[in-house]
Amino acid sequence: MALGADRAPGARARSCVVLWLNGGPSHLDTFDPKPNTKDGGPFKAIRTRTKGVEFSEHLPQLAALTHRMAVVRGSSKEGNHQRARYLLHTGYAPNPTVVHPALGGWVSALAADKNSDLPAFVSIGGPSESGGFLGVQHGPFVVPRASAPQNVAYARNVDAGRFDRRLAALGQLDAQFLGETDDPQVQGRREIHAQAVRLMRSPHLRAFDVSDEPARVQKAYGDTDFGRGCLAARRLLDQGVRLVEVVLDGWDTHKDGFERIKKLSSALDPAMAALVHDLEDRHRLDSTLVICVGEFGRTPRINGDEGRDHHPQAWTALLAGGGVRGGVVRGQTDAAGAKTDRP
Image (cartoon, rainbow, N blue to C red; front, side):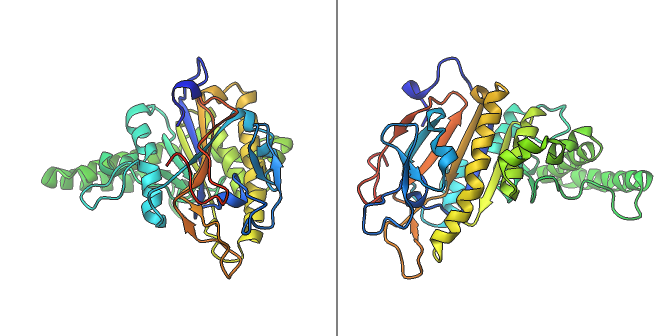
């Protein structure tokens, strides 16, 4: 999507932030509005910094940043949540004979700093896809909420000495079982345990604690879990993490869609805009690819519950940084937002 003429000269992505809009966002009520059509919905369209491109009125900060973004209007082959998520994360349709790694799994396996205390692949706000056939050790470190990674402190009534004795006992059992079975998953689990211990004892664990940031920075990202997740993502990049996915759930808007999208947009707009500005101010945007996308779009027709249903024939993704030339558009949808000219 960002090749050839769409690549900024001299820039190359070394890290990535995926802003995953889980549930399938309505392109018609976010990044590709059709306000003058029968089922265009109640939102107004506003101009962006890119000629001919309009966004929803509830995304004003992102509209002001399109000169730093590529707007990609493409098509998915899947209208089922699970299958579409798998396809978008791995590049493959689900196959019962093989489990493909997510992009983060490949990054973990091929580009991770093996001496780092932090995992190379982190997912904040929800799960991502797995490490697949590369092994469980290359799956995401899942943090349900920024600033609150789970299981990184000793359990109640367990001190460091008792913990180490338990760990040694587990190591003996794993070694015996591995010797008897030669099961690669056992070795993968051992690597995960070793990494988990390093993380528990690492000062870099504070990268998840966004309260260390100045109040003005926290305010810019927004007082939401998603905003704090995006801020934590930037802090993790500062510490060498290569790929962070931040999940904004709730976009499966079959019912009461417009009120829900308005609220979701109020979380997305400041958080993504602040992330792009922050990376640019730190001279990190050219080396960090920011991707904002969900698994599919939603129907041009508004259903009887004031929502829209699954629509894999057209949707919009935003790309910023990482060598992507800003201010460009690839693909366009028809007058109703039903089909794209570049499936």
